[in-house]
Each structure stands twice: as C-alpha cells, then as structure tokens.
Length: 168
Length: 259
Image (cartoon, rainbow over all chains, first blue to last red; front, side):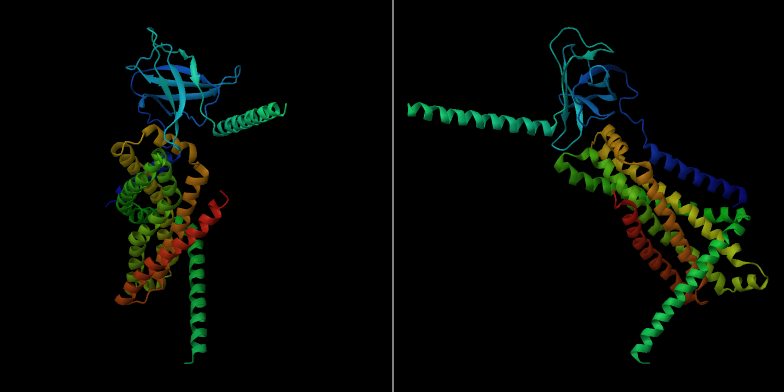
C-alpha cells in the first residue's frame, strides 16, 4: 500500500478513536425518543421532586407519553418547577393531576399524570395545578412513628380513664 | 548441584533477567525522541498495530456489550431496576473490561506479531547486520513499534467501551424494551468523565506500555532459532496477560478504593 494510503488509514483510526472518546464523554446525549415528534410543553410545581431527573419519562396509566425537559427551583415559592414535553397526540383535561411515582420498589422516578374530567384540555405552556410530591421515606417513617406514639398515648389515656373511674 | 546452589542460581538468574528488562525498557524510552524524527516509521507501525487490530477489538467489544446487557437484565429485572442496566454496563466497560479485555486481545493480536517480527529479524541476523552498519536498532526498529503500541492501545480501549455500550443499547433498548431515556440519563448522571472515563484511559495507556514493551523485549531476547521464536511468542502472551491482570488490580485499588 502507498505511504499516503497508510497515513490516511491511520488518520481515520485516530479520528475514530477520538469520536469514541467524544461518545463516551457526552454519552449520546440527545437520543430522547420524543425529541423529533410533535410535542407540547406543560409545567408543574412539586413540594419535593425526590429523585426525578431531567429526561425522566412522563407516564399516564403506565404508558410513556413524554419526558421531563428541565427541573428548576422556583425562587418565590421554593417549589421544584418541572417542565415536561408531552406528545401532541395525547391531550389531557385541564384539571389533570401530576404525581411523582417510582417504578418498582427501587426503580427510578417518573411523573405520572392522572386525567381529570374537565372539557377543556391543557394548552401548551399551561401549569398542572394539582400535584403530589415524591414520597420521602424518612418523612414516611417519621409520620408512622408519630402516629404510633399518638396511638400509644391514646391507649394509655383510655386504659387509665376506666381505672380512675373504678376507684371512685 | 545441591539444592541450595540451585535456589541461588534461580534467584540470580531472575534478578539478571529483571535487570536486563529494565535496561531494555530504559533504552526504549530514551530512543523515543530520536524515532519521532522519522515519523513515517511511527505512522506505519500505528497502522500495523492499531488499524489491523481494529476489527477484532470492535467485534469483541460488541459481543461483550451484548452478553453483559443480557446477563444484567436477567439479574436486574427481579428488582425492577432494569433502567440501571446502562449504568452497570457502562461502568464495568469503561473502568475494567474495556482496558483489560482490549489489552488481552492486544497482547494476542499485536504483541505476538511484534515478537515474531523482531524475533525473525534477529534469527535472520538483520538486527546484527544493522548494528554492523552503525544503525541504532533501538531507535530505528524498536522505538517506532513501541510508540505505535502506546498510541494504539488507549484508542482501541476507548473504541471497545464505546462499541460495547452501543451493543448493550441494542440488546437492552431495542430487544428487551428498557426505557431508552432512562438508559442514557441514569448513565449520564452517575458516570464521571474524569473519575471513570479518565481513569480507564490511564489504565489502557499503562497496559499499552506493558504489552508493547514485553512483546519487544521477548522478540529482542529470543533465541535465534524457529523454536526460540515460537517460545518467545508464547511467553509474550503469558507474561503480558498476567502483568496486565496484576497491574489492573493495583491500579483499580489506587484509583477507585476511595470511592
């Protein structure tokens, strides 16, 4: 093979290697399956977004209908502002509600949309009013302990009240 | 010969060959600047070592990616955590399998051909003839091959990992139905460019130095007979592979032990 040919092949090899490096570093970032399809954007505010990430799926009845595009903190209300893109072919009523749910016990979190009953549909740029935050395990355990403690106190009170009555 | 003398002789022999290898390696490194002036030789060696190893590296990377994705899927589906499949495949490829398996293949594909080439040059007394003509064989013959190996190995390891991740994507997303957004986004959120990808490249660079130096040393020190060349080629694969595995453990302990 001629010298030029070998040099070209080596150049291609090095460029291919660098392309592999770019792929590894950027991880083929724009492969969102809804990137090319027609979609409309809606937002929702959550008290706590939990482990939700940008590009997490948006699902309704378990079917993926869109993706989260950005998550920011609203500086006025201190709520998480979640922007999402939903497929144009899926129209939700305006009183639909959004929840942050977890797929499986240890899986990743996604936005679940439950359709409401209103005639009018969500328009592009609308905000979903009714939201339910991600479940935080520590808060859940805290609530459980408090309610247990309250139950215990009630039971004690109930047990001591008849005893006090019997004495009389 | 009594046993004590035998042990002593073995030890001294080992130290002697270790010293020779160290001197050889130092000469090789010292000859690098001189051979960079004849850049055509280096380019030809990158072609012989890197370009021609590309096919086996890409095919193996793809196969490893496929199999890793399948096996991890069956383990993860029990816990409903199949979205993490991309992350697991990515980390295992970029941190360990990419550099190590690519280095093992590199020792088998490129290392043996280097040893056989240098060994036959020696058996045919070409090396001796060049030295008679006052040509520095280290900078003319060995160093271009050394540079070729050092340059090619990291590129091959990167391509191995990249192709493996694409293979895992094909199996996980297209065949098994893992969510493609989660596949990439979990990967992006947990894989660090410097800690994971960077350290993988450092590893593959070290492995490139080891494999190429071992192959060249074995070729240079071969006994100038057909059996000698055959023996040297075998030793290249064995020594290079074992050194890669031991070094990998040490490097992993240094790089990732503190999280």
